[in-house]
Length: 266
Image (cartoon, rainbow, N blue to C red; front, side, top):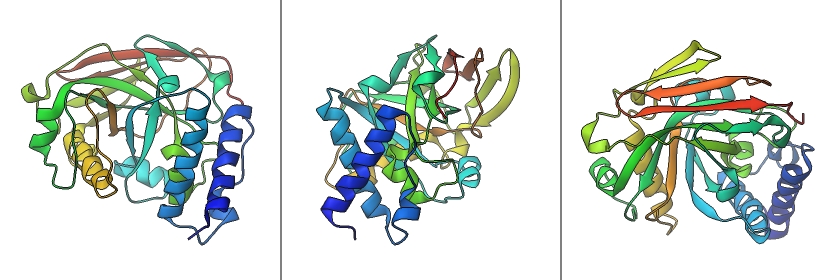
């Protein structure tokens, strides 16, 4: 296990990369013996720097839930990160790529909670009961490292590679849907570029949220009423460029859209 001063230094380096737009060396290269526990401690340090600068936590994201994303990054277990107010964009937003480093886009389902969830022992039924509504969203993942050739400790330390997200305005009651079967269609500039179903996310986005609640519960952390939970990508990561217009539609839920402008920093 890395000592606290080293995890603090690595978390500070990631925060500096975030604010400067200049990549930092990978954790897996600097500390090849580091493990996932070390990586989460680094993540917490990076998060604390964001909070100290005035940001606030508004939810969680689940990453690496689909085989497509696992294959793309060469890691084979889910992870989680924190989402903050500064990361949030509303449906229809235009995002300046100049605020990001190496962005990729994914479409997924977001959950807004109306009551707390505290694991372990949280079931899919508990998740559905605790959910106010679900909505389509985009997560724009990003890496503060030199490139996307990362290992599990890298993405975990880097807040599960979260950049920003666009939250849909459509709202649906999960009690009215089988979210494992709800199909997603992702369009880029008017053309379908990917499709997927909720089953791609650990069997169902609801199961992914239950996994998160139970994983955090073992650490003494609960999911809180009002939080937004990004449940994980239902299709492979997508490249983005200046002028791109994306829509994400999930059957029975609704549609979310966004645009990009400018050029990424790296």
